[in-house]
Length: 232
View 1: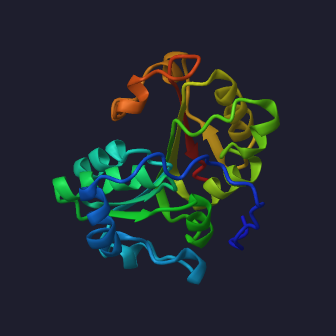
View 2: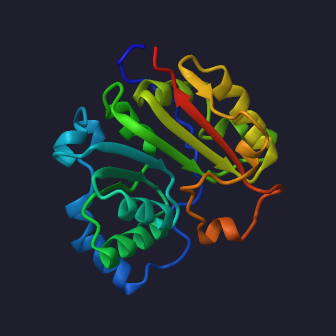
């Protein structure tokens, strides 16, 4: 696959970027902690994961980390892995900063904006895991083009994953699961890891349940789609 960065369309895949005034502590962390753990501007040039965390044994990318609960828990479980999180919703970023601060996590790097810019700046085969959990479903047909999973983003994910690397996509909207499965299943280099129905009906052993998931806002129980990057 070509390593040339893609040209993304003007549509954004996320909705609002703020819902309420940030809590004082979170606002303070935007000034004190975020500058320390922010990714360099991806528009300025390629990103080097090893430069972000020398000695990192793995590199994970979470696209749309919500309130940061999952990102923080996985970072705590895997301190030798660099955890890159992207989230344009500022209240979610504030929540993630609180989690990072409270748990003293040194392996998290945040990008408070669209993940696609970060993806374009990362080199081929640089990621061990990509996590997309409960993205905005854009359920109306006229808005489907805003869904994060599109043929071009699927190709980018395949480019970024190391051989054997994994993509986990989780949604509680059946139409989005069908949409994502159709696109991901036809993306060169990605292989669906499911062998039996429980593989997509049951949460993987390392799944972290968040408050958002517990709200059950979709139209189905969570559907877990796991893909592996082809090794040859």
